[in-house]
Amino acid sequence: MILIQIHKKFYQNKLIQRAFGLLVLTCIGILVYIGYKKNTEYELYFYDSDKKTLIKNLELKPLFGSKATIISNKEAFYTIETDFSDDSIVISVNSNYYKADTIKINLSESTGKESISLEPNDYANILYYYSKVYNKEGDSKKIEIKRKQLSNIIDGNALIYQYFDNDDFGLEIYTKQQYIDFLTTPTTSLKNLEIIKTKTNKGKIVEIRFKIKENEK
Image (tube, rainbow, N blue to C red):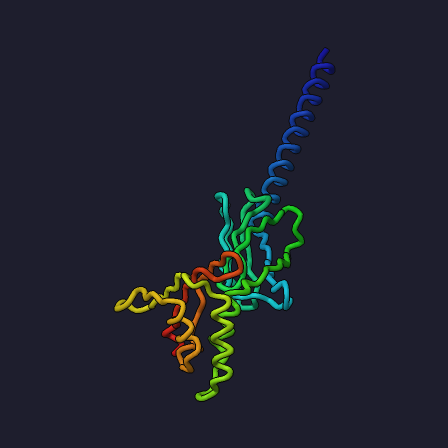
């Protein structure tokens, strides 16, 4: 009888030890998983869909309540730092010279590096190009060609705004003709022009927002 009781007690102790061991292993597994997810970083590389070149200066924002942090890197990629609650992440992508996009990344299946193509905003790039092509004084033929091309792509009733970084002036409104005159008059300020936003409708630019970056004069 005593032997049976000793055997029972020994068996119960074994069960308790095994259950405790499994509990400890489970807790360790959960902690390792959480630690791995918290310390994992994902690199995003954005490419021009036409030129296949790396894109910098994008505005990225996590959506739908994600706690992920997105950090811009000097080497033209973006790092996502996320916690264990994010198995996937949806990001809005905005740029002055590329079409806005929304992308979803499955982090649980990611290799740690993602390459994403963005489509250029052709109209914004055309305006930017014209601001960088300097016509020499007296080169009337080239200036006239440039004016006609701009007239063809800008709607007659386009809303055109210039923003200012200083406190004296906040906003100036241009007509189509005033904007074309501005872009086709040789001036050093054009090299600091930045297209903030464009809107198009039926193949015409109907809205332009731009500024002259004073800190680069």
